[in-house]
Image (cartoon, rainbow, N blue to C red; front, side, top):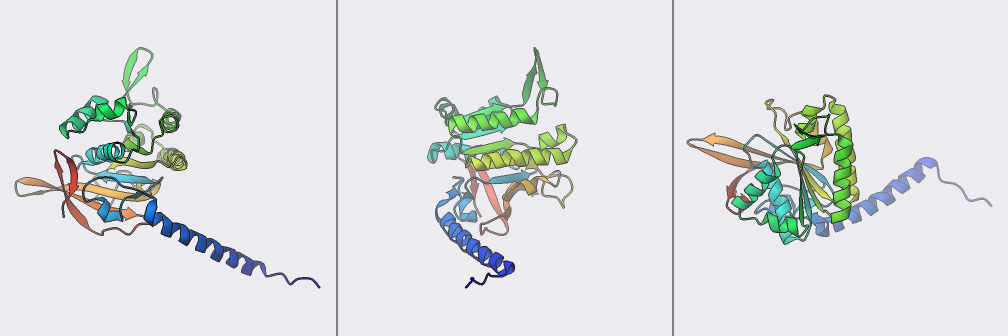
Length: 267
């Protein structure tokens, strides 16, 4: 006697239920162990203990809000406290400037670089023959960026990556769709190598957009917005977790301060 076969629709539903149970189990385990603490005072408490390992995040904000400092500290804390080597790819601020900023915060970035715990890839000036050029398509291409990232990640065991700012790429290449596709490819490569990454961008003049070009946020698992407001005779800085997939997070803005020790979320 032949066995009665289930209708295809029921078989698909059973398979979906089975997979959902597996995913739910994985999610519970991930909440407990699969986090990358930023090490930034007061921030990890806003996002259940840290960023999800292997995911890409956007930090957006106006000039002077602290985006680069936040990102550099993410790498510094990772290398110095959690034994996670980091890679900082800079398209705008020179390596010398980043090192000087680190010295201002009493972070010994030079020691981390010598011990191969931190790599700074300076793309602010590219060389074409004997001529130094600012970043432009003649001297720089996205394939070269991908190769640089992948090589560093695999050879140095990089676990934290910062690209600062990715908005420069959108300015240099007129086709936003191409940039979005290429950054998605880069993000996928970093995810395969279990790198937790931050892509830095700016807030545009259009207050309805949280990023300059309105597409950067679609690259990321989460979006963190930094900004400042003038109040009386001083400038107060704020942070807001705008989006964070797979993580309960504090909804609303919090004050931040930048001191000799780095960034702190204070209230």
